[in-house]
Amino acid sequence: MKFCSACGSRVSLVVPEGDNRERHVCIECGVIHYQNPNVVTGCIAEWEDRILLCKRAIEPRYGLWTLPAGFLEYGESSMHGAAREAQEEAGADIRDMKLFSVFSIPHINQVYTIYRGVLHEGEASPGDESLEVKLVAKDEVPWEQLAFPVVIETLKLYYADMERGDYSTHYGEIIKSENGVVEVIHY
Image (cartoon, rainbow, N blue to C red; front, side, top):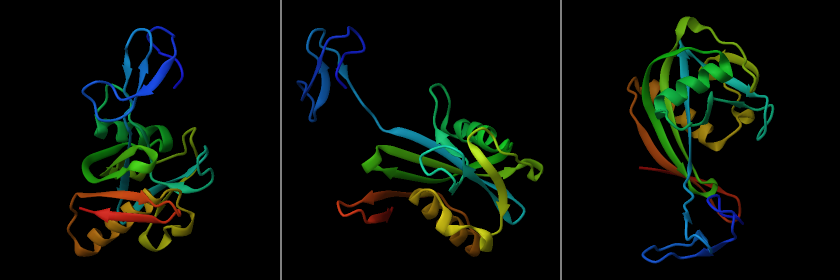
């Protein structure tokens, strides 16, 4: 950030009085510009013994598979955002949604909330951000073509819960080390 969104003056990266970390502070008007992580929300849309996947039509990770998900908008709950994203990306009406996982991803400043829900009548069709959508059984998941580590980890947890016959809510962090190795921590 270089300029203040309140007055247009230059900002400096300083630790404001009473704070403990650097923030962008306007030199002229004193406005502190806080930056917070983005919330990404999505869902595992279930139909019978299959789940819905979307092939990405946008970057990042164009052409790879993911769960329907996207950034939470102002004025909506995490669950309603997940339902909206499923509608936008896959023309999917999701019902009976329950929180399944929450993952913090500090190195990209994101928090993911993923819900489980029922895909109404098993119907879906690609939206503007999807090249293709499909329902897949466990043995049909294209593991090597999944777009994001958080999706891979979420689906591993989902199928482990499915095998146990007991779904719970999962919490964790996905951390990328300096040498690029991804580590998952479960709480």
